[in-house]
Length: 82
Image (cartoon, rainbow, N blue to C red):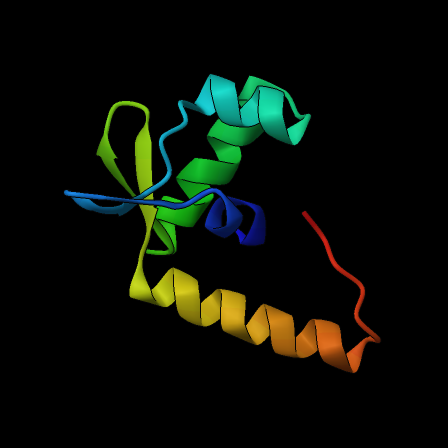
């Protein structure tokens, strides 16, 4: 999710991630099937929502999760994922 947050862009429609799942897979270095499962899990957890085809946004819940993840990373000595 931190990776997605780093790729957010402010637009007239709000803050969005303008990547299709295939583009996310290429940029992140993972398979499209893995990214599809990942996005579905994040949507089920109300962390990410699809704005339109090829456009996602991180929800308030998602941003809260990212904040907690960053706190945990600090406890673990600054190790980062994604």
